[in-house]
Image 1 (cartoon, protein in one colour):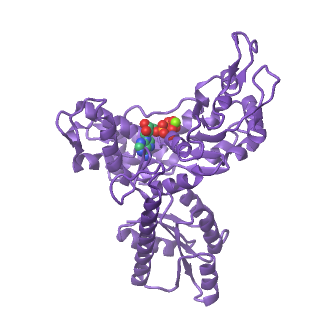
Image 2: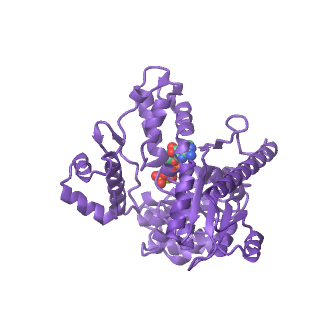
Image 3: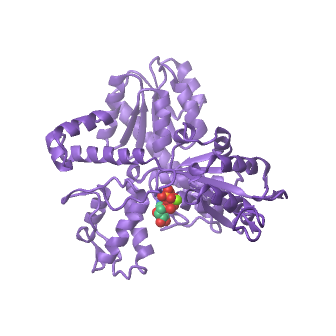
Length: 468
Ligand SMILES: Nc1ncnc2c1ncn2[C@@H]1O[C@H](COP(=O)(O)OP(=O)(O)OP(=O)(O)O)[C@@H](O)[C@H]1O
Ligand SMILES: [Mg+2]
């Protein structure tokens, strides 16, 4: 099964291809123009992009160029209406993996797609083998023979996580500033640590600052240090985290919450690689690699959230977006096994395996709190279980289950820098969709599940544009 993105401005074509692929068991994303296709790609990462050549706005060749530039490992199948050799040749020159000329039969299409996916898998396997020969002494560890289901402490065998691993591998060796995006609990901190551990600075310090947890003035002196007497209570000189991270990496966590005045100071260090302590005049040079993280999207950072554009561009040098767990549920089994290993001793649990039924139930939930929420559920289950096998019955209540609808265990959300409304709306929308799907689209039943009056449900469905 592969993840495939279809971009075509023709409704019937797009829907037809979508249906064919889904019937073959693939997971699909569809877009009616190049720009929204690229956005979907950004969000999900796919194995194969199928794009029409002629579209208004961003056309197929532009899509191809953009995919080649940013996702060199993604295959691109171009569909051309003309059957003229020229356009097809041009597309191949620009790096299309293959092309298909309209009209074509569903068999032709199916065969082509399967072949593309196979070549991709084959290439990846070869690359993995090559690499595993090379990496004996590096940070990369293999979980079980031939299968790279982990990268250091980061576990995942889904295509998007495999891409993340490759990305870390490449980026770690550079000195570039990295910006890690991702919802809460997707592993941003783990990635930051892995980048440090894979870099030439690995023997230097890894220093983390949680920008969201400190008040504006505290953050200033925490980052840049202060001189004796700089403010009341500053009884002695203190070096800031930038200085402490000298020769290593500084992880600016929840960077979106940094106050405007501190943003200006940050910008200066990023540009000049030097700083003054609060209340000090001496200029101090620092040799630090910056890794920043936020649970906002780049767009949210830029639109009126008080984040300076110039600072954004200084940080957004090499961006990475970690996919939410709900788009890579294939990772749930390896993650669960990893957490059993990791937490068994701490929880004094007799558990050493997990049943398929338990995994299925865990996979039926959308995990708004992502991997962290999953880890919490596994930890609680380990505490509750009394045999060596973790079964469905050992799972604590979470998400949607027979008892009714609950929003799951306290989703771990960081308070600072969180837009409460958007978080609440996100959960509301998810619950509405879950209720509708459980009610098989019967609105009255969905309303009952949610304890809402039908009119309130209609209003909310309208608000989120949800159609049963
Ligand atoms: N791919 C993964 N493999 C193993 N453990 C993971 C993975 N992703 C996350 N975790 C675990 O989930 C928890 C949350 O991860 P982390 O703190 O890195 O998330 P985060 O993106 O920084 O979240 P937040 O925005 O809430 O701070 C940690 O305990 C981490 O070890
Ligand atoms: Mg974090």
